[in-house]
Length: 254
Ligand SMILES: Nc1nc2c(ncn2[C@@H]2O[C@H](COP(=O)(O)OP(=O)(O)OP(=O)(O)O)[C@@H](O)[C@H]2O)c(=O)[nH]1
Ligand SMILES: [Mg+2]
Image 1 (cartoon, protein in one colour):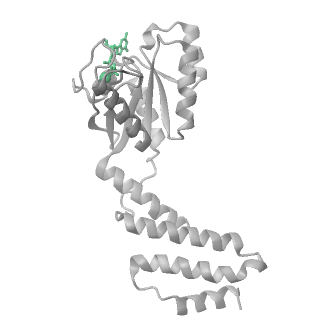
Image 2: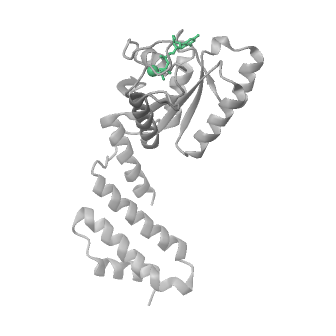
């Protein structure tokens, strides 16, 4: 089971090595999302302005942090708007958020705190890993800083590039790739991962039911299934002799 888990995880790792970890930067208009993208990339990649609704379409670029490639996706600020093009941008933002591995959700230090907490609740409901960022933090009073710390916010000033190191550490922690050993076998084929997942499901059912006499008949089925899914990868597993082997070894079934 551990081996299966490792192989399944290795697919994610392989994917990350190939394409980077997609991180969506989202929030209301004008909070400083594009400023953050530029600060992370260390270049003026996205247009920044004091006008809400500056970013209309998503902008993506990659950087490596401690050897891990992150693909940052700057998005149009989320708000109700009568502007057709901006509305399309907002729709695209919401789509990107749904697909994200990780969301950097940004609010403006000048926003009303109660309103910020409403946004945070909405974010939690999406059950996608996120980092909650309060930008323009140089404008916060000490008690406001404390309030946001209590809500596990990271305080940054994107424009001044303050807090970037803390943000980068938090990003690395969130993706938790510290235990990758790239010399291990990497599974790169999505169909293989699917087969491994199915194998694991079947084996988990075997483990659940192994001491339950009522369900012992199902055990054989689940073991057969596990082998079947493994066979989808190797193409060589035939169930009969293996099953026999397992049955005599573990004395289950008839
Ligand atoms: N005081 C302060 N202003 C900032 C900071 N970061 C960004 N800004 C300003 O906030 C304004 C909006 O910045 P953008 O990066 O364009 O904001 P955005 O979230 O991308 O906005 P949209 O694209 O419209 O959704 C600009 O005037 C920035 O200079 C900061 O750390 N402190
Ligand atoms: Mg922008």
